[in-house]
Length: 257
Image 1: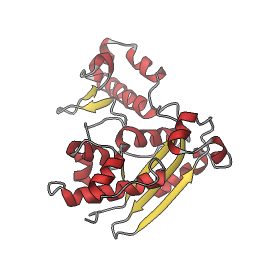
Image 2 (image 1 turned 30 degrees about the horizontal axis):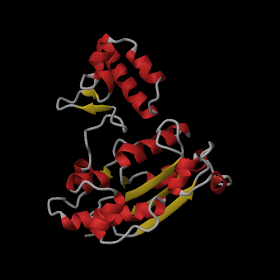
Image 3 (image 1 turned 120 degrees about the vertical axis):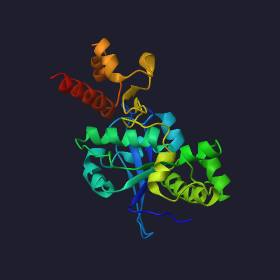
Image 4 (image 1 turned 90 degrees about the vertical axis):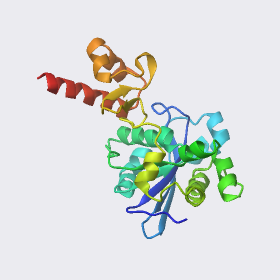
């Protein structure tokens, strides 16, 4: 089944130095922009992370320090990425929990405030896990009846994700071929920040989604624990998460003014 699109949908995948959103960096990004007319634009770019690539990361994606020593930094390509992505929705495999927050953090470090607020996010892994509970390679085998050659390369994983989503639409009649519906279906929670450290409840309140205050309204916690916001701002959290907490504090101050 072909995708029913109102605006371009970018499928993307990252290879990184590790799994920390705040400390690790991107070493390769691959994007396939699928336009409403069905045409596609592919871009794959290796990136010099500016830090050593650990051996355990190289063992997974086979990208070494030597491979990226002459490549541009993320900051050098950030503006062109922003232009390529603006006006598009975003899809990937485990992208809501990792790739999108990682990309957002890199944009922050490059001094670019990419606006994700009006973007629909489709996480093909979430759809797969809700339906079958598997990995990307198993998903590709299950839905497409093919083995995924070149697994853990950004380009191969990105193209496989496109095929898997199309096959999911063919297999499940209840999955509407609509980006907004797929975005809603592949969301675990209604996140305030990209990492889901804050989520909205059914009353539209920002609820803390981690740690000892999990399940409590952030505004209530910050009233009781005046050091909590300072701990967030100094802690190992993405800039997007810190901004979400700061916005709540600003709203509280405006209400009390």
